[in-house]
Length: 125
Length: 108
Figure 1 (spheres, rainbow over the protein chains, first blue to last red):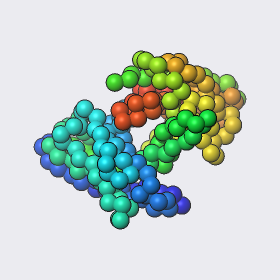
Figure 2 (cartoon, each protein chain N blue to C red):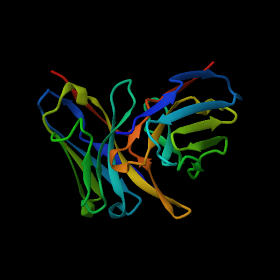
Figure 3 (cartoon, rainbow over the protein chains, first blue to last red):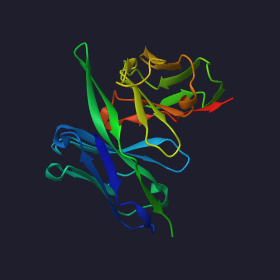
Figure 4 (cartoon, rainbow over the protein chains, first blue to last red):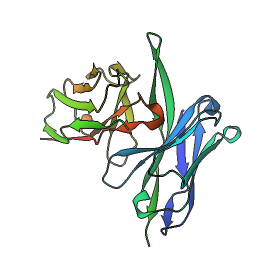
């Protein structure tokens, strides 16, 4: 079964740090680009960060740039998000998501086709 | 950044109704548009990619259309399990992808 399982969430004070993990199974993890997406309580989805399959390409949303760091270990089938200098507005459910690729008429389309169940990060004093 | 705007923000409908949700991009994104369904407490689920291609396993009552800046998601005959929140997402700028604000579909 294709599966992503996040862990590492919790309660942290403003300015603190957390490291989220995402364990992949049921597919060849090293073949896929990956995303972190978050959802604040009662709000919509916000893309956070992207990493290519071999870690050669990494990108962040402006709201987290300089504070969050994405990484992966293909040998361990794992994706990570190091979260530093956390703010109250970082409170959210954090999902890892696989970037799938579809081909239609020689054009390539990206989407997020496998998601984990999410891990909750609460930043509060 | 490309802004995605969905309408309506919420919608009440009955089982068996035909429902249409609209998504508008702030600039042309060709057909690089995905739709997701999210139920309370659950992760999003991919329904449609490339504006109109149905993801494997998704019921055929879901369909998508559009190109450029204007897109629609249609559910031809609402089923009880379809009451959820729906999000569009542009993948034209995949390294800076953005979602619509969501459309909450409720039972009338």
